[in-house]
Length: 206
Image (cartoon, rainbow, N blue to C red; front, top):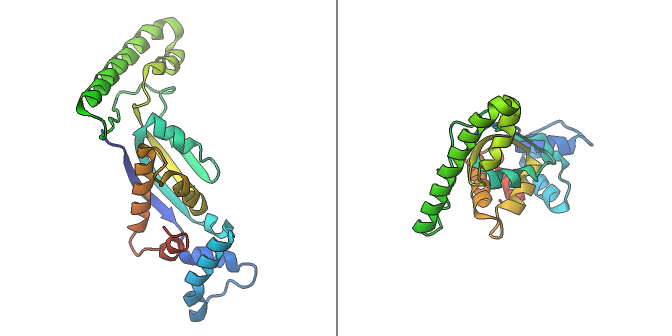
């Protein structure tokens, strides 16, 4: 199964970023100041004055492999992540990411491995529960689950952290799976009705 990304909410826009920057002088807006917003945001981005961009939030629901989950967890500054946990519940909707750029025979080998791992996980959970108790059985049986195993994550970024995330993960040297997630996130933000972050995206050349 492919990784998936859904934008489930957002707060803020270009004007919010500009008003945050103008707090040090005057937050009053008139037509001339509104016209200056793109130039101001470009100036802030180029000068490294990025705190105004922390005032907006982007909220995603992500279904991804464990390796990509780990990549996301490394972005802890300005990022909030809650996820499906095999420690607290039995993962019954087992799904795995099979890389599409692999030869078919290796894809099939990974599918077989994942099926076997999932069967061992459930069998071990059932066997350990009467011995160790349900809680310990759940948290330890998951050791059988492979990196390809997919989990559902609730992920939010402030816009500054989102830009930082894209700078590391939406680039050719990033692992394909997390790169695809980052690219999908950016496409979703660009597709928000009314394009509220247009000037901000252009300021960061995104």
